[in-house]
Length: 148
Ligand code: SF4
Image (tube, rainbow, N blue to C red; front, side):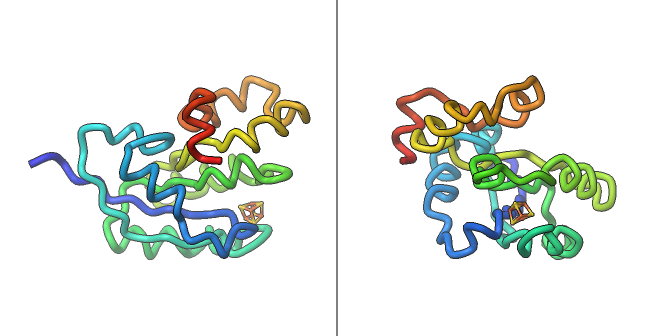
């Protein structure tokens, strides 16, 4: 039997009403941020929002997820596609990794093409640091269109 990885998902509170459709589709297809689990079983052990700016729930949610065995926490793609993207991504990632010892992966589903187009025009993701942040979710145009 394949290894099972337990994960938690934290979404940007601006999208708090999101039912997770794109995230769970991407998980089932092992696309975007979930492409790292190509040959693994995945169990979602927590799903919540950051709690709203400036992300108060980041202090508490990982602990609950850890109690359920979370080994990896994904920041949903909304963190990077919001207008503007979350300004606290680096701090949150570092905090969770250092305090809870849980790896953080930026991104869940592939970036929808409609967000990609606007951010390209805005120059939001210019700069090397974004290359790393978007590495799993930038995908190709065909894939991005599937998530519009
Ligand atoms: S921008 Fe960041 S801190 Fe603000 S609601 Fe979104 S994820 Fe939370």
